[in-house]
Length: 107
Image 1 (cartoon, helix red, strand yellow):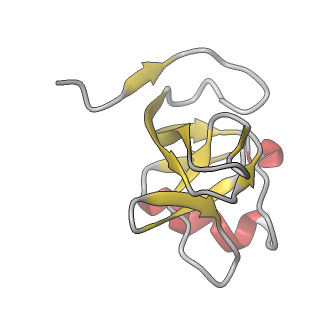
Image 2 (tube, one colour; image 1 turned 180 degrees about the vertical axis):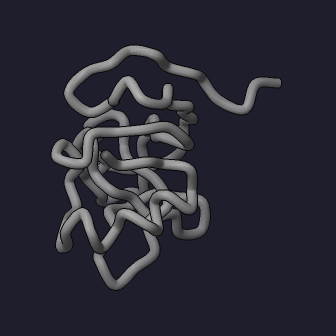
């Protein structure tokens, strides 16, 4: 059983430094996120993360779950372009080390 999908496609979010590994999870009902947005995991479902909360990952796709929980692909490990990440209520500096602890490098 594979732990995730390794992706080598470089674009405006994914950098060429370290390929990303992704997984699919659940975006909580009522949440809406954009590609590149910092997320937190609460009880097995993802929502956007505020600076006062602990980030877990970055959304790899835009998903609107306002009508009910939806599947979402997210980054488990790899490098992304810091300037393309949506930090919600904070800045890159406020999230950088916490994301690094999960294996996500912002550059």
